[in-house]
Length: 160
Image (cartoon, rainbow, N blue to C red; front, side, top):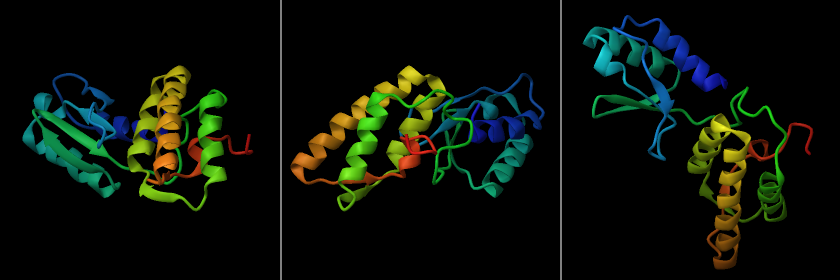
């Protein structure tokens, strides 16, 4: 379990509810996680959770009985990937390395995408990297630039 998810689960476990709160990857690409806490806890309990999460730097929004939560780390959260990076991640890293002066776009969407995929499975992470590889190759051809993304999202700490 990655550090971001663990942090939210710890906060949720301290809230009185009628059943354990769900915590899942958000389906929207502009948020990392979602919880159904408003459906199973009192308004005071929900407010306690919101204040605690905001104090830790989480940005939140409510939507149809769910709380959507987002906090974009500079580097991948600890515990995200347990498997070695695959060939598509290495290809993405190669593109960023070969074109360091063509970083123009905000990388938050890509970070969210990789965090969510990395939580799912190594195969999902590679599929996400395949999508990014294609997007970035097209962006380079059209001059749109690459996202500002730390290589740590695509390479092991020792540089492999």
